[in-house]
Image 1 (cartoon, one colour):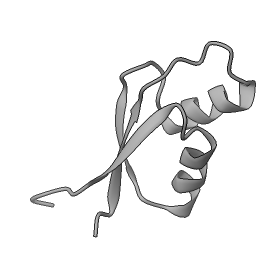
Image 2 (cartoon, rainbow, N blue to C red; image 1 turned 90 degrees about the vertical axis):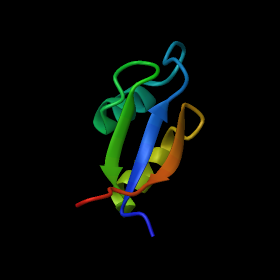
Image 3 (cartoon, rainbow, N blue to C red; image 1 turned 90 degrees about the horizontal axis):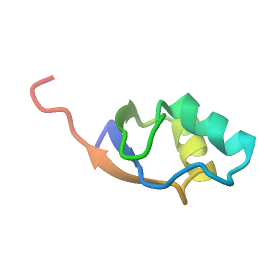
Length: 65
């Protein structure tokens, strides 16, 4: 089971609410195409659910750590 997830921002924030923009900033996804690898926690999953239409996610396994 992956302990981290890879999140990629796929869509723009033009026309989005301030809450959605703030959530993306909280995830560290400051521009389209940005990829972040974050710990798979309930807090992060909740943030992803709020902006699921703007991002893509996939499991990520850190090898060698």
